[in-house]
Image (cartoon, rainbow, N blue to C red):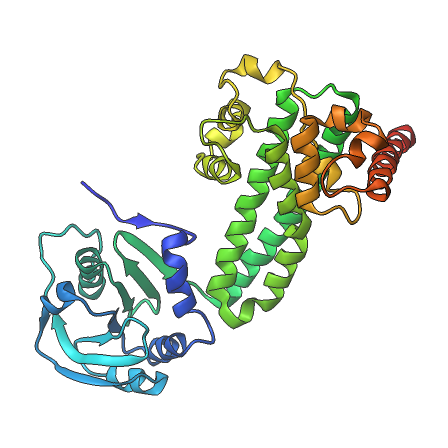
Length: 363
């Protein structure tokens, strides 16, 4: 028997809905007005043949939506049907008669009806509880409670602190990997560990982004904090993948990112899964094999070196070790690199290596 998917955080399919009902939007203002009045309401957002087939009674209004009008109309019995953009009120005081054989785990009449309507029509259906004083969103098989702004802000701030810790760990892992790359002693386990840290960081960042959507106009500060924390980190992770993924089999940055995102919480803990996604063997033994960086990430640390030029260098030399040992004349031959830029690359790589050695000696 199918059970409704109750989720703590919205997936991509619900993000558009959260934008529609976020604080600061007219619809959210109307919902909050109804909630405070304790009148309860059943609201459907959108019109299609499926919803038209189960409407019984009421009357068509087709007037402009305002928070005040939603509040007043919710005092009547029956459901309210809005346009898909929630800018017009189409029907009021109508009964919805969904198929009673559609499974629903809800107990209250209003919530059970909302659940069945959402499943049968695919439209966003909102139930405002008169007694429990909560707003519940239904769409398809997804159920989501709109939470108090203070609670969401608290969770978002906790997630920001977690993200900051993950970012520190990820940067430390990358710094260790950088030292290994200069020594040419990188193992696949070192790379997959860094990718695991990156994926964990990105999941927390996505969680915070969902909080921001739900906070609406109240989430500006959280958004600024998120952007500051992930600004350079995301690029580092992408270049790490470009450095080590196996070519061929239609593998790309996007497919690797999608593969990592699809891992379950348990699969995330197994480094062999990251090895497989990169195109290496999936066994634990594969983690002990030596691998070589292409050099994207290290070259990106040299000031004023555009990514297209970095791609040209990698395409010509193939590995970071070959780039590092190349002469100025050999670098100068690469398209987009003149003598000045060739010297800048040589000096930049030497400077990075010396800094790593100094940091290691200091430690």
